[in-house]
Image 1 (cartoon, one colour):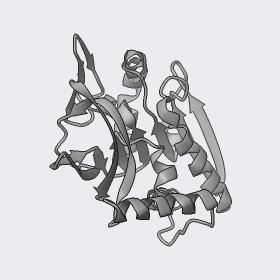
Image 2 (cartoon, rainbow, N blue to C red):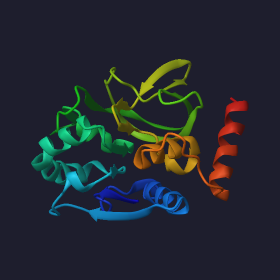
Image 3 (cartoon, rainbow, N blue to C red):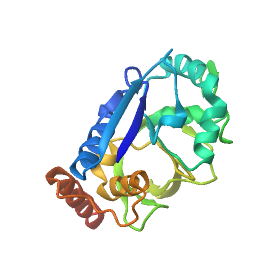
Image 4 (spheres, rainbow, N blue to C red):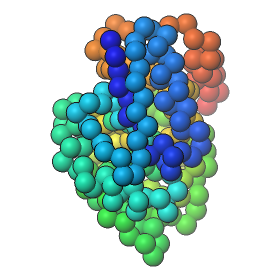
Length: 230
């Protein structure tokens, strides 16, 4: 079985080693016998959403967002259809803000896709923290790293819930098979159960289990240790 993954804007949305999400996914899929086709697409390339099994976007600097959103707006209807058809779309870091209504970056306002009803705003302080969060996908917690100066007011369909300074934070968005989160790390490499969940959807196999991959097992142990030492 062949699985086609589109890595959108791999060249300008590539902070914090987020390409590691694609590398670990490709490795795990091939280890399990799947043929994997990675399409690296960027600004001015033609996007063919009806040919993708998964679309991935990583974190970038705000200066590149106007370039990206100008390109993405040409495909808004295709993206909405893709999401509503329960196809996998993962956006990590600040890239998922591009699917809200707008981003308020001090003196700059970027009108984004408006697919989801939230807005994002630049904060005075940068949040840099490791987190351990509850997921709405499964009981086990998800770990990751936050390094952001923007937050949004999304209250519907959160992806994660965690405590920060004794306050509960509802983070990200989980709508059908669209996953958006500020958590980087890369998140799929550090969370084997999330990686397994993604592959189950891609392979249409609810019984799929990850093969014995050493660094995935190490990531799982890292998750257990963090949970026990919270």
